[in-house]
Image (cartoon, rainbow, N blue to C red):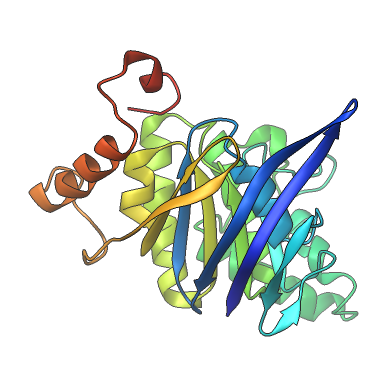
Amino acid sequence: MIQVLQVSKSFKNKDQEVKVLNDISFNVGKGEIISILGESGCGKSTLLNIIGGFEQTTSGEVLLDGTKVNVPSQKCIMLFQNYGLLPWRSVLKNVELGLEKTISNAKLRTEKAMHYIDLVGLKGKEDMFPHELSGGMQQRVGIARALAIQPELILMDEPFAALDTFNRYHLQNELLRIQSQEKTTMILVTHDIDEAIYLSDRIFIMHPNPGRIHKEIKIELTKPRDRSDGDFQYYRNIIFKEFHFNRPETLLEFNI
């Protein structure tokens, strides 16, 4: 479904050219959940923005269903950790936002929005405003809004980083439940090793200077997964070794 082909990205810094990404290639199949894991500054978010069409490559290309990605489209939606909700709109009106250009009939638009509000567990809260919701609920609204336009791909940049542990775990479970129903392809950028193992079919580990894919790890565990299970710890140890977590300064870059 998604092909990232020899993507490199450089930025100008005064008179120097700084290479942020170097020769990145991988494929993502329909319905997969992929995590991109790496230290701060390795170019994870830049890569995600390129896949979404928000930034252009210096060289290489990204294909979505065989078509080159040049600009953002409704085939691909980005979710951020700051939720991106419009404070003057209710839950219902926030979820309807992406439907307003495609569904002119107000009743049909509301019915579709309510379906996804129900799917994320917010039925009964459709008339509330963002400031009346917890962080976890606001992120659910963001997920419902993304799903309502039925994108082929959802990109997530640290979507649960601002939440406490309990809300983060709960939303991870909800994301897996929803994804199993909708079969939406997802690419997640995260610092959280456990989150990557818990959610992903495959993990791409990035190294910095310049950012590049160092290793691909296929997680061969059934979902939902048990974080205390020995098999889960097996993958955790593999990733620990990849980042040399015997170095204390490296621990600061990750949620451990």
